[in-house]
Length: 251
Image (cartoon, rainbow, N blue to C red; front, side, top):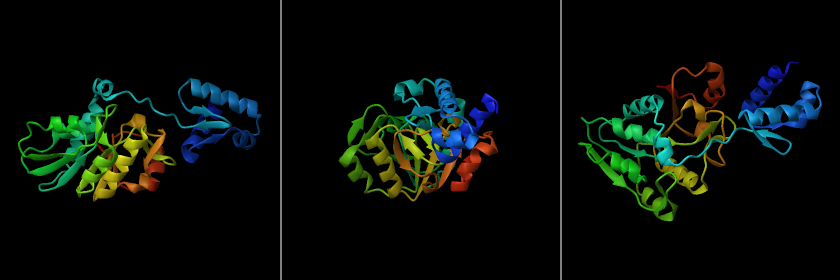
């Protein structure tokens, strides 16, 4: 078996199982563990996976702060934001998570109907300063400056008083096995809490977040009402997600 073929099969195992165990793969391929470990080291150097004792896990995405992420706001995020904004109906309450993609929703919300936007992010609330028809509810709490969102008991208590029709969730990673995840324990907890309080939850995902796993789980792929993704992602790559969640919406 060629090295490139081996590495491709290892990636398939990683997507399917959420982990690679070197000993098991060596037995499956009838090769030495040293050969598989060398492959894993090389693949880790190429940024394809994350080496751990005995094997490998999906890559953990980098977690640049909000200012850095704003600087790379892309056309893809704008498309996702416009698609999500078009889902909002008159009289609804929506909850916008913090982040650059949800900021694109805020910029594109309809201006000819009345609705309410709740958020725990002061930067998202500021995006709506001049919106003519949006009522804005900003919840308080301890400010997690990395993402500019409120967390902790005070935020939990305020959010519990709301019943949003739609929560637009942001995460740093998505994986069929490891689910939706983010990089901070408290932020993951507040995201789960908002989802529990909301009628529906939709997560927006750029392609670079797929098949990755951050340290703090938020929800399973099947626990959200739908996934909003860019069009053009290969069906083979999406198949494991579709098996878990039939509502994959392409923007």
